[in-house]
Image (cartoon, rainbow, N blue to C red):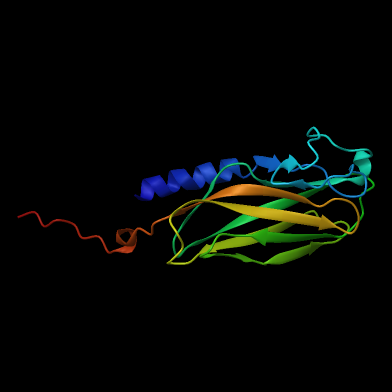
Length: 168
């Protein structure tokens, strides 16, 4: 079991650089806010009128695995166009039994990421869930992008003391 945990940790470290990017938002984006990774106005992925005055958010591109009763840290990135200087409010929508800390974040000019801690309670529902990250600028359309969260049943035997068999 320890070998599996080591492999999962390495995969998580490798995947940390991989992410999923939202639609553009902010004052340079055309009308029609993007939600859940898709434009509500049916527009193509690049719906910008002035890309320098927009932003996108990047969330984990792979499923985040967490055991009941455990926590994990995830980084959400704000990708600013060269002329986008607004404060962006970021909020998180998590499934029941999972808490996110901080619950909201305010990214001011020059701040481009927030680290959040996901904590699955002992009673969190086991299975695949979605966590939605919503980023709202001062002006222009907001964006939302989900990422997948897998809550695993806690393996209580993992922490149990190991005893070696006695050989006569």
